[in-house]
Length: 158
Image (cartoon, rainbow, N blue to C red; front, side):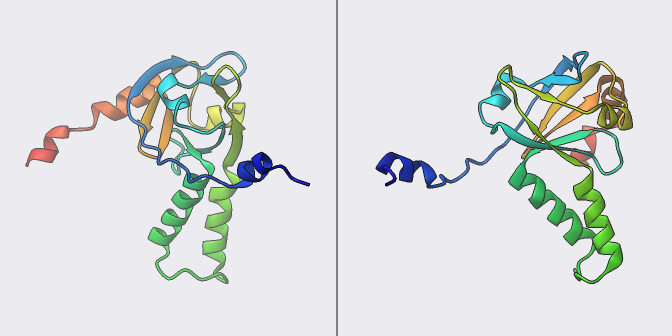
């Protein structure tokens, strides 16, 4: 017969809202592991989903429910008239989901990025990890700096 404590553990608690911010200059180790900043580890679960950004500029990392919501928002934006029997929509959805990997934060606070994922977005050793709301992004440091050089915050004040 289940104990009361076991029954309480089975009740799923509401998930805390994640809002990640900040920029962290880090390195990928020789095995492809990235150490997450302590402030991220405090709010994220141990089970994450990593995927390539749609144009392969960087890696996005989400908690699983947030990843699935992101996929659905992308699909809804691209295909306002969603139909299950539309081959283009099905293939697009399949491609988004197939590019994702489930990863676990290890006891040292690291996640593993596959060699294939790192190669596709040009990640070698020096990276920038950026909090961006419900996700964080992992960029090759040089690519990130070049991209940020093209951003003009002055446009916010025109």
